[in-house]
Every structure is written in structure tokens, then in C-alpha cells.
Image (cartoon, rainbow, N blue to C red; front, side, top):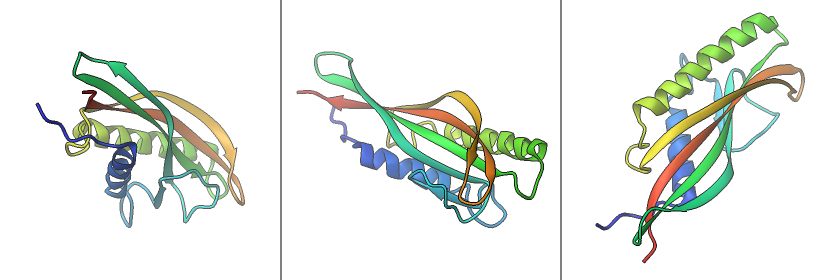
Length: 146
């Protein structure tokens, strides 16, 4: 079996492409970023960065490499209530999870993706407070070791 070796950069691009499908006029997000920032083009927004890498033995020919990305969805609370911001976050979170559930190989770039956990909190953005939800997206790639 010959597999194309997918790098973390290729996986990062595939995640950005998936989030791009949820971003723009009339879509879930106003903006998306493949890096963390407190300066955004609007809300709600989504951003992500790699947070963990590992390689686990599969057999004598292959290892499973896992690339974990922290995905953070942010909604400001300057012009809306905390309750409304939370409602928006929850809806956005469902849309993000649905997008990865429906394309669990990122169009063939990975063997599978899994979203794990969900952490809520408050963060100071550039000009005002915001709520966020953070989840980890674990992307698994089978790579030859011989």
C-alpha cells in the first residue's frame, strides 16, 4: 500500500479550507484565521492553531501521526447580551462540529478527524470583552515508517 504522506501544513490548510466554507456573507462566521488573534474583522469569528503532535505505532510498516489543533470560536459582548453571545457560540459550535463530522477525512487529507472537549470562557478582545468556546480537533494520518 502506498500512501501520500500528509504534513501538518497540509492538514492545517485543509482545516482552513473547511472553515472558509462557513465564512462570509450570510454564513456562520464573519471571519476565520489560521492563527490566534485579538484583532478580528468581526464576530462571530473562528481561529485555530496546532497544539499537539504525536506518532503512535500501528504496525511494522506504519505509524499513526496525530495532529491536534485548538479551534476557538469567539463572540463579542459589546453590542449584545452575554446570553445572546452564548446562544450564538453554541450555534456556531454545532455548525463547526457538523462540518467536520460530514467530512471526517477533510476531503481525503487525513484518515479521520475527531473533535474532543469543549471549554467555555471569557476573553478580552482588542476593544471589548467576548465569550469563547474552544475545542480540540484531532487529525489522524497514517504514515509509512519504512
